[in-house]
Image 1 (cartoon, rainbow, N blue to C red):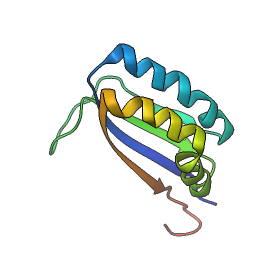
Image 2 (image 1 turned 60 degrees about the vertical axis):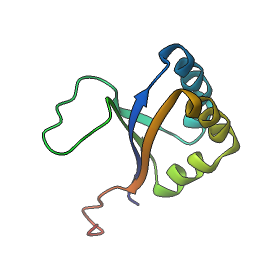
Image 3 (image 1 turned 90 degrees about the vertical axis):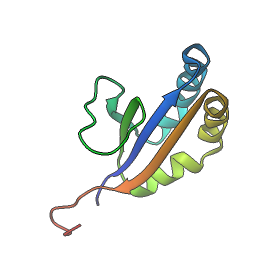
Length: 101
């Protein structure tokens, strides 16, 4: 079964307030088996435009990725993020070499 991923591009307007979002998202991420592959850090935009921060989170399945996002615990965390940042978030299914995706 292919893994699921969140790919997020974020602009943070209030870093101190954004820390409340980070603290609140820890529980739903743990519950749904999330693992950070990219969490900020330097980036080179070589084509197009991007927000200053990129994040890639791996989940054990696309179903887990979707369920985490829809969970009440993550939606409560997201409510803390929304007033202090802007984000583009995608949920994508990973490539399965055996399944051809």
